[in-house]
Length: 231
Image (tube, rainbow, N blue to C red; front, side, top):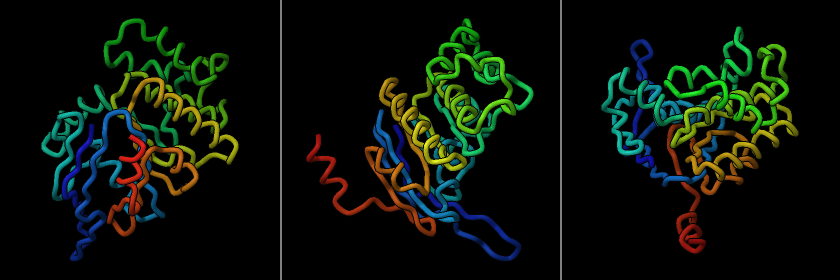
């Protein structure tokens, strides 16, 4: 599903160059759930943005479902994201003037899906918000807003879902419910799940865990042998 080779990302700061990611290599299989754990400033959110085609690397390549994302222009990356990628943000990123139903309907309408309202209603029912369809984000709790965001992310039947600190702005109990929901949808729909988080407990719920420190990605020793033993 996803193959990353020697991915490096640098930014220019005046006369200096800051290396945010250095030589990242990663392969993720279809349907897997993967967590990338790192502290603030470790490069994990930058990595997620490059994997999803939100930005382009300084060096290296990203291949997503057969498409060489790093070779696409901005319009081509946008089409790829619309057709194959879902994204859940820590800050929800809902449109404040739209209701929960309208927020979920929007990508369906843009994608030309038939009966967008019916599908949006079904998704919101699935995430437990069937009684909150006409509420705007300001009328919803943080956990409810994140449920709307998850419903919106799954609306286009993505082959891969990226989640950036999906429980970061939530209390422990609500965060647990959101992680339960993500894992359930990942299992039910066979969607590949890649999340970045600083929460190691959440990361252990994924099939594979990586750590990132100062832009260098690593997988715990013995992880590959454990996967082979379980297969």
